[in-house]
Image 1 (cartoon, rainbow, N blue to C red):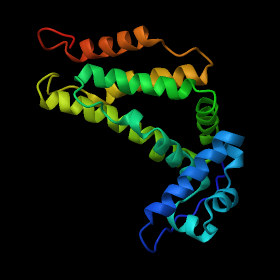
Image 2 (cartoon, helix red, strand yellow; image 1 turned 90 degrees about the vertical axis):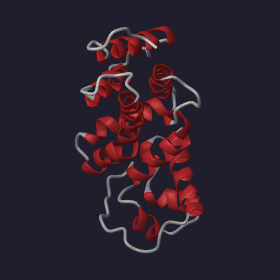
Image 3 (cartoon, one colour; image 1 turned 90 degrees about the horizontal axis):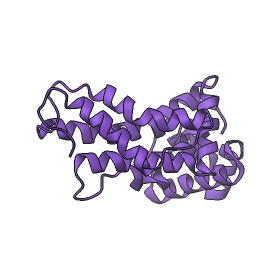
Length: 204
């Protein structure tokens, strides 16, 4: 996952067809050969687009890979239709654990996280194209619960998001087994009850 970065991305709006080919190619290359295989040159060749087109629309190969990876698991950050707040949170946390436990995506993300410490392009891509959207999906669910009166108005949504999404990454980086379904449900309910401490009742 190269760190070469271009900051200027002016020009025509991205074609969705071209975008789909580029993101698909990037995700495939990274999953097949690791982050190092997803160079701009390799992505351009597989997607059958020019390097100029890629650099016009993306700042780095890392940004393409992580956006493509997120696109490939987009349903994991979509709230299930008809779900309660707690069910939606269990979905988000459980899906993240499953993705990070996958033998292809887990190592890819672990490598990206490790590389981000010394590569600003990868750090930016990781935050903008992977971590940010996943955190926002959980935050949106929690803010909806606040508006509905399920959680107190002064709920610190950022802290609750940290409590919910940090365990999967912690376990990934330290080589620990992911939580099972029962433990994921227990984690979500623990955070949920903590957020409701100023209200009577609890659970869902």
